[in-house]
Length: 230
Length: 124
Image (cartoon, rainbow over all chains, first blue to last red; front, side):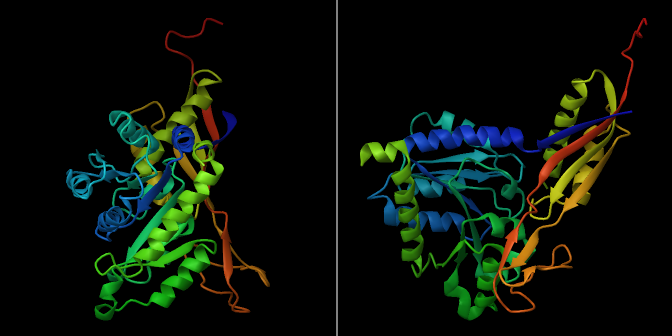
């Protein structure tokens, strides 16, 4: 019987692919946002409203991860931004190689963006493990899902730099303890940011859009592309 | 359920480690799984059985070394005795905010294997 120490990250090969993507995004000065949530919590709707607000001033694009259908990419193309669907055919998450393949298939169309949104497959667990070369993860929690979710899914709520509470226009109709959510997120992720939005009424959208433009400015200030264009 | 994909990747890494020493049959693979890794240890062990079924490593076992995360209070220090999965919103002693650290491990630690003689037999 022989024993050998391995001491390797299980996801080392995904991390290597993600590092290559991250270097390409740095060179292009593109801010990359990985959106993760349960199905139906409003990722695509938030992106539709974001596109409407920012597309005149910024070059936006999206990769849409789903098990089936082109629906989400079509919704975003209707909003006037380039979007490509990634169909995982049953897999519960995107990985760096799927993102790389989708970007390669788009040629240069998504290579010169200000912000690339990657909408992950609707799932609060599996996408958490896979680095896609993004600048930061965003987790969405709609008020209809209940206030216990951060402690039930601590991995994503502790890793996401931004938590977006969505559908706040429904707060009068559902029992949802917003202060309890704020406390759980603060406990799991003291440095994380929390924004509360209703994509339907537009309430809180300014905070979300401001956060995006702030993160883009931060990235531009420290990347070669940003320095060159400054 | 992404544990199946992870089990396949763990076997690939374990096989690479064995290959560095010559032919062998895996007996035990020890992995570290953190409380914040988004991986369920029971599911991973179950997925391992499926990943090795019908292979030379079919009798092998995946052992999970669970690594809890730590919640720490700035004033009172680490919260002791917290059960896995039970998170505190505030320090139970002083009510101050807490920070979370550790628990994101997902590593292959060690492989134990039995050397096997290639078919055709060694001549010495």
